[in-house]
Length: 276
Length: 298
Image (tube, rainbow over all chains, first blue to last red; front, side, top):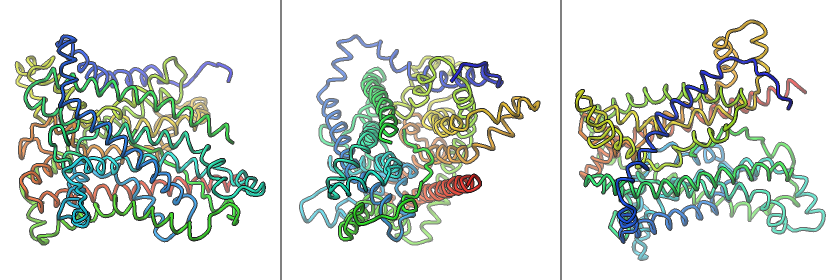
């Protein structure tokens, strides 16, 4: 596109307001977290963020988030596939309900999942005789994180599946490929970047999650205590600097993930147009 | 990060009649549908049904009593106030950001778009924490606030700020791709015909993106009314004063007052269902408009 003078008005006003509002609400407050940690020496900072109880919380938070994102990758792909390719009664409602975890407040999700998966709940009472305890264990954390990450994979894979050209599949079939070969060799490579993006989004959302987890987790230190709860506990004891130190570790990881996701989305878009 | 842009479902089935070579045997189809429905029931339908069952377990009278409790009413009021401030603020920001980003070229644009997304990447707990660091007793401006007898943390302004932060990107994220796709020909035509900048915005740009705008507002509102972690950090949980509905749910639940906790939760679940219904309605409209548009060209 040739560079030409833009005649529309309002550039300075809109960009100026955008930058001002962004700075006041997001950038300056976030920088406060980084500045606050400078009150600690590096050794103090390191001692706080590698304390055994904090390390145990990272392990739970990242481990459970990873497992939840993997569950969502598998079932999210399946859900997207079924919603795009097949017809069945109630499909429209199911499609709309997939976004429930976006719309339902996390605290409501938390108490609802706890009620369902507790020992006397609808599903919990059925699992417990088989020796499977969900509520108040790390398994409960995984269930809650699976719930809140559920829409991401479905909603990233769905549009890509919809846009796939049927002709390539017909060509594969006419060349003698069976359905499974067509899926693994033709369809899966096309949706792979979108699947990975959805997985990363679900994972990123899960590591920061608080509301839906604390009710079902039981919050036992070293066992079912997530990192965001560590921050809250430290805050309630007025240990602002050490709460912020843990927060900074999480912020840095979240920012790295955000950049990775942006890269993935860029790759995914290019990939889709290249496949076409 | 937690919003998907409005999708225009290109209906796959209408394009090609699926032949046997490009579809699966019927038993596989129903097996996959069955597994999907089972998964979604376990994770979505059963918990949703549990909210309403638990809320009505002790009868309709208990339900009404729980909702008309003064503390419950004040939590509803505070939730509405927070949303009523946060939604317009982020709506104005979203329009301004989308105008600058979609209609103009400038350096650092992609960095700006990433920065707008930041609040989605931040844990809600940290979103609350950063405002405590600034406005709390030990915070940057804490002593100034005390001198002037102002309270932000453990008060309504803190709750509003935390809500604004967590809902910051929704409208902007909906509008930016939409306004980029629409280009600026119509706006330029308006300018040539003598319209002022504000007239262009009100009469051309905003009507063109009205569904995306509405969609962004609905998502912002749902998150604003439901936010828990960020608000929990800054609220101080003062009953009848700084409790929003989600926080009130937590307090009732921790007091083992399950019927009342689920009663308030059921209102929030209804809000979620209304949000989903509106979202489907908007998508249906966008799809219909797109089809009409297509037909008028054929």
